[in-house]
Length: 337
Image (tube, rainbow, N blue to C red; front, side, top):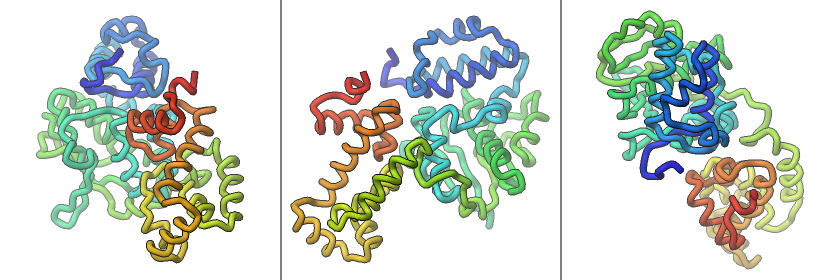
């Protein structure tokens, strides 16, 4: 059982790094022995593994594979959406700027880092007419692989999905120039400055408005048919509640669910929407709460508790679990069982 007070990484990321190191020649059992983690600890992609064990896995992997650039090559060989629900949520965004917003909202699901309690981990910072994407992770000094893998994840995913788009112009890293420095530029796809004041990528500003290629409008394609049918039935409803629900469904996973925005989308003032819902005996918050419950019960039939929580707009599984118990009198994990 992981101590909830200590920083953790998702089981999906731990397993993916383990598999990658093994693919390069490391012995699986020997790697796990160095981390103190058992296979059952990361069998669930949404399980939490101590961050210290993840660091130990990196260090053991570098040693056993003879690959000092393991943190750079890991993102090059793996796909974000296959390791974490966060990757799927980002793919469901409209633009790269929207995806960055979702990444910051859910980044702790991938890995918990120090130093970002006062704002997003990945911060856009204009400087001297240029735009920088800064990783504010404070673990960089004793765990530089964490930052390097994150920045490489940006460049590798972009190269994979948008090979003709010039994303990065320069890369800055706070670490001293390592012996394997030559491995950085090909993966970060830009000139690299070591011993810099921050860990950051100088990016092309047009990246923020770059539209994302995605198969459907939802966070998970597997629910496209179900959600389309539900949307149609709601759009056909003549009640104010039905119209509100129809607008809320594709937005649940984003967490951006303000009554003002829904009223505007309906061509109404907030007060008019309030009156129409009140005439039907409900409030906006009640409609949202009931919709979350209905969708959660549907998702739990096929998804994990963590995935369900984020699909219905909860950034923390604990908050979703409390809400679900309030709705049903039982825990979502009990419902899964």
